[in-house]
Every structure is written in C-alpha cells, then in structure tokens.
Length: 450
Image (cartoon, rainbow, N blue to C red; front, side, top):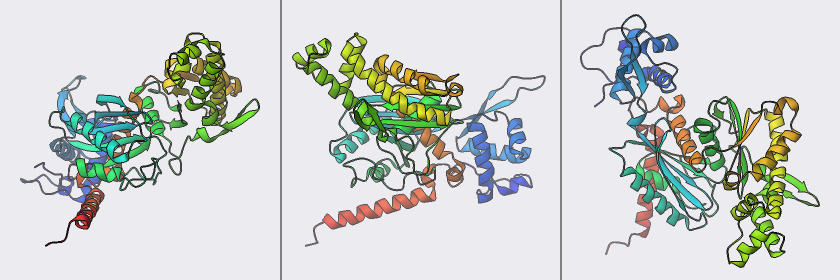
C-alpha cells in the first residue's frame, strides 16, 4: 500500500507509521505534482521556491507522490559548484490513456502515456452509419487488443474524438452520461458501455477540437501561442488555441464555420455545401460526365467512383477542370477564414483534411484568399501551412484532453489521495448508477421463477 502524506508533517517531524492523508494535504500534493508535470519545477529547491512550501512539507509530499508512482527522483542533474541535485520527473509511464477517433469513414485507436504522448496507433476504414452496437463492439475489441500489448498497464482514462460538437458543461470532468452528439447513436450508451467494460473515466470531444490540440502540442503549432486550425472534409470546422489552451466557448460549439453562408457567382449556400468534399466530388462527377476533365472522364469510364480525392489527384496531374474545382473551394474557405483571422490575429493557420493533405491546389487558393482579405498587420507575419500530424492529430489531441482533465486541480484534488482516478467520488457514483441500471435491465428480461 502506498504511504500517504500527513498534515502533521507541516508542523512536526514525521512519526513511525505514516497516518492517512487529510483533505488539507491535497492542495499541496496537487500543486507540487502539476509543477513537476508541466516542467515548471525540476528539483526540490525549485519546488520549494515556486510553491512557497517548506522543505519538510515538500519532502513529505514528494515521498507520497513517489509512493503513488507519479513522480521519479532517480536521475541526477548537473552540479553547479556543489552536490548534483536530484531531478524530479513526472512518471508519465505509470499509467495509460486509451484514445480513439470516430470519423465518417474511418476508425482510429491508440494508447498514450499520462503526458499525452502516443505510444501505439491503429487505423482502419469503417462507416459511422453502421449500427452503433456493432461499431462500439469493434472499438472495445481494438482497445482490448492494444491493452494486451502493454506491460502491466494501469488504465487512467479513455478519450474519444467524435465528428459532432460536444456540449460543454463548463468543467474538465469526465462524462457522466452519453451526450447526443452522433446521428443514430442517440439511444446508445457509449460512455456507460466503455466505463462498464474498462473501469475508467471517459472524455468526449469533437474531432476538430482534438485535432487542434494534437497539432498544437505535437505538430505545426508546437511553439506557437495562437493557432487557428481548419479541417476540410464533408464537414468544415475550425479550432482555436490561444496561449497554449483550447478555446471551447460557452457551449463547446466553437468553430462551426461550415454553417456560414457563402456565394460563388449566382450560387449560394453554406460553406460545407459549397466547398466541402461532397461538393468537390459532385463537381468532379459533372466535369467527367460533360467531358470537361479528361482525367476524371477516363476514371469514370473504367468504372471508378469520382470522389473528392480523385478530383485532388487529377488536379495534381494538371487537369484544368479539377484545378478550377479545388481553387473555387479554396477561395470560399479562405474568405471565411480571413474573417476569423482579422478578428483573432493568429500566428499560424493550419489546414487539415485528406484533400488539403494530398495536393497543393486547395492550400494555395486558401492562402491567396486569406492574404488578400486580411489587414496588413494580421497578414504580415501570418503563416498558413498544412497539418503535419495527419490522422494522428485526433488521437494525440484526445490523449491531451484526458491528460489535462485528469490532472486539472478541480478533478485531481479528489482522487490524488487515493492514487487513481477511479476512486474519484463522482466516478464511483457513475459506476453505481451503471450497475443499478444493468441490474434493472437484467431483471426486466429475466423470466419469472417457476
């Protein structure tokens, strides 16, 4: 059993047989762990200085955190004239976070350490329109497959990226129920199913939010203070990171730019309808059928479907009609994003999605429209690039969502003394409610005693 910190350690020497942690010790444990976890303090002396806690208290708390497996002091730092200090490191390998991305046509799963660093990932094609129980069963199977490849993993949480906006309750706490965010999944208890199967708290975030987080921490956004992330696909959405943090807005509905009305010539509609991948595919099929695109027409004659990716590949080959289609979409996207840039003044704009990743035409047209419509002060140092993360962005971002949630002071202070998030009172209440519901459902279908 791990030893626990004592309030008496604040005022008198430690006695043999460490007593149980008092709730008044939790704030200092939380502060010290997060100083170490974020790299703001790497030695005991730095912790004492930044936390303004005494040497005995810091030593006691680090002893507790070490016994819980959350910090490590085995490494020596560089000596500066005296004895080399022991470095205090966050033990990110102590636990694991399962992550997944549910997209319209793909399923990605992975596992990360407690710092949000991705250790393993797997991607496969799927259809989000298939029955919810079947897709959830596949997700559970893949999670178990990944866990079997870990050496004694201690699971701390599960984080899922979904296509729709996830309502924000104003807290970093895990989900206590399944929100209605996926079409056709309204009556399926995804969160409850995962909690029952893996005994771990679950977070849900929209795909554009997790991709923004992934790009910010491990991709093109690394080192930037303000980043605007734009995902182009069937849906077009945007994410905003400011001072290294994701901005979620009042209801978690930030960046729904696909609903913005736009006009191209005599046609008008929403940005998604006028510039998304479905529109690109539709225009590509029309160009093939009318003989305007030799490349797409040849593909159609051979029985292949004309998708947005086919249009993008044709554009890369120099097909004029395909170039026009992507350029038009890029200009419309750029016009909307330029309005956001003039409002937010980001350092960096990142364009993501399979179409943006596979060719330069859409990116070039979007850049031209943004630079042309932005105020000179906004565009002067503005960088506009494609995503460096690709399919991994959502998984990395999902891991960061869970890691930040797990160690947020408002959540951490209620599980740090027990040593694992599963002992958080709200998680225990959630499990009890799921168990009661399962018992009621079992009794409802059980035949009466004969």
